[in-house]
Image (cartoon, rainbow, N blue to C red):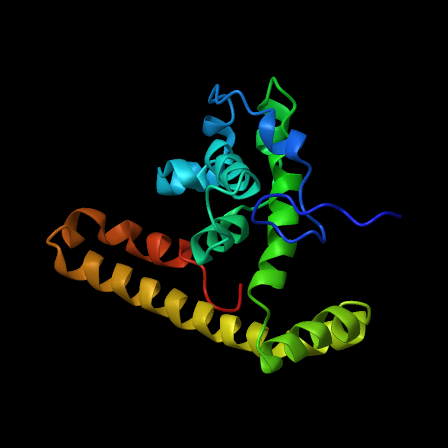
Length: 185
C-alpha cells in the first residue's frame, strides 16, 4: 500500500478523501435531520458545517484546531444526514476520520489513554467485567430514583392537603396518592 499524500492540514495517516468533502452542495437537506444542529442551532454543528470545516482543513485554509476536534466529537454519528443528502455526502464517515485525526493532533494524556485502552480492550470484550463495573452506577441511580419518587409522592400529598381543594377531592385523595409509583415499583 502506497503512502497517502498529505491533504491540506490533515496528517497523511487516515486523511479523508478530498472528493468526500468536496461533494457537499450546501443544500441544507441535512439540517432538519441532525439532532446536534437542532440542539445548538449553530451552522458548524450541522453536517453541512462539519463537512465545510473538514474541507477547509483539507484545502489548507484552516488548521486542525480544538474547535474542529470538538465538532467532530459533538457529532452523534447517527448518519441521519447521510440518508437525507441528495449528493451522497457521507458526513458520518468524514467525522469518523476527523476523530481519528483528532487523536493524532491532540494525543490523549497517559492516564486517559490507559483508561481508554483498558475500557476498549479489557472491559468491552468481557461482559462479566462490564456488568460488574456498572453496579455502582446502578445502585446510585436506584437510590436517586427512590428518593425522587418519595419527594414526588410527598409533594403531591401535601399539595392536595394544602391547596384548598381537599374538601372537593378528599374522597379521591387516597386514589390519587396510590397512583403515584412507589420506589419499589
